[in-house]
Amino acid sequence: MSASVFERWRELLTGTVPVAVMGTLVCCALPIALVSVGAGSVVASLVSTAPWLVSLSRHKEWVFLGSGLLLAANYWALYRSGGAACRPGGVCHPSHPLGRWMRRVYWSSVTLYAVGFAAAYLSLPIAKVLGY
Image (cartoon, rainbow, N blue to C red; front, side, top):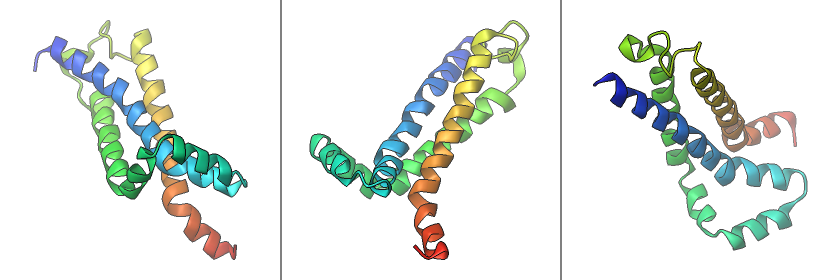
């Protein structure tokens, strides 16, 4: 893969990962959080406005798997790929402003993914252990 194609692929991946991670939050973590604080009517309004959220939440395993795979691919593209594409002065190099921005977006996405995963899969077992 040439350096310019690799750069474009890396930038596309960095742009799509936050969108995929936001999908995990909207489908699973946001409704759980809203119901937990007593805003069930907001969830009902959200589902009536965007009925596709119901089908998205039914397939949350695939949503989380896809987002996780995109995060893994983005990690590889940012940190492990090396080579000519990330030489000093290149867009993905940590010294370049866009390279720093891509890393910040990546780690923000990882944090949001972890929050969504915890809300979707760990909140009920933790509540059961605590006796709620």
